[in-house]
Length: 543
Image 1 (cartoon, rainbow, N blue to C red):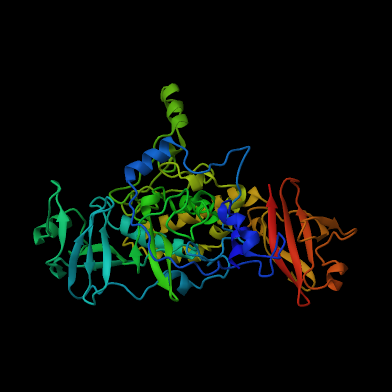
Image 2 (spheres, rainbow, N blue to C red):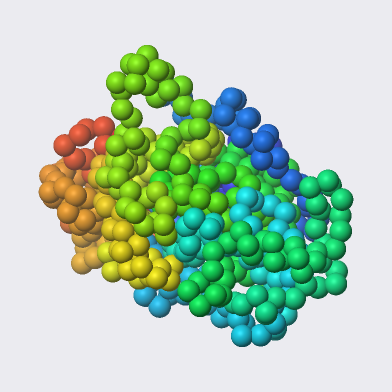
């Protein structure tokens, strides 16, 4: 099982050389009996890992001025790995198939990663630790039930902006399949806060000392108050397990035997670039992720999380996002164009319009271009994104209806309904732009199935009214699973299953090549006879 999995995700390492030994008597073949794998095999047990830190400065400079990892080019590229035979990322410690594959109810979307651990805002709140990471003010606290949270606030200039973004975007990322913490908006009074005797901080001189009530008061002077004099914050419920720090967007963790796919080649990380573009997460870098050593069903393994969404959807945590958001901090070509045109060249970002709504920050949709959007600096996995990676992500974005988007934005608890409407409207427009940009990168057919002796599928571009239903041709073949050779079946050019499939024995394979108007964009659907039934076992795409 594990040998099969390693082959399918394309490991080019010493592990791959052992596959014949791990699977004696089994020739190399394209499909195995349990394909398509919807879930990775159980992870290997991990007893000890390194507690490492990634320097924010190192991450910035190394990614800005060097090409890390194995980078794709126009002439040489590596297709995404950590995918099953359908081209999807299977359930794993990184990712879980959710909303697109099984439409989540409104209740499930709103619940997100959990809704049973909101802090008790009526009792005593104990400050137990100073916040030492990130740029926004905050602290670690325990509520009256002993539950621990990371607490962050809005900037004085923009009440509700960062706290709303943190909650809203965490719900979207959960529905999109990622591991995220439970984030809650809550309000409290100054009188509820007490400081634990063990709470300490490191001051500006590098000296460690106890946290005092004055420290808490000075922090609260930097954050806004609600109309009734209370404080609004976002509380992130502590993740379970041992925090073993950030994961990089290239290479693997050498101390994790389950981390075998270079991160720059993972589909769930390449596709993440599209999700970040949609949600305005330009702060998507290594320090805003974290790994936890967890135990489930008696097995210890590393689980990978996205965290810290205060710098999304127009927010930069300590203020509105930069109007230049969506391009690299050091972008040579745009800077040169502005310089040599003597100011006559006006970049897109300079033409953007933002409402006079402090809770919105700088978030808009009119100038948003999903194909050119990039985070603040280079991300090896994002740079490696290929058309099929973008399609995989775009089909998930398009699965969110207007109603679902508005329901999740409502969780930001905006006091001004105009802010809620603006954010939701922008996400809807940005969603549609993503669909128009990325679904046509490949033949946008998906959800292949066999019904009533016919091969069925959805034309996602037509479904979402982004294009008219397209013409296509079909050619059926018998498929040799060992040699991967196709033998065309003459005259079989409709979606109805050929008669040869009906009389085929169990374990025989067939392929349907589907082509549209562009001959470069094809989809090959592989079917297998199994216990008298015909099942879809794989999809290959070209562009």
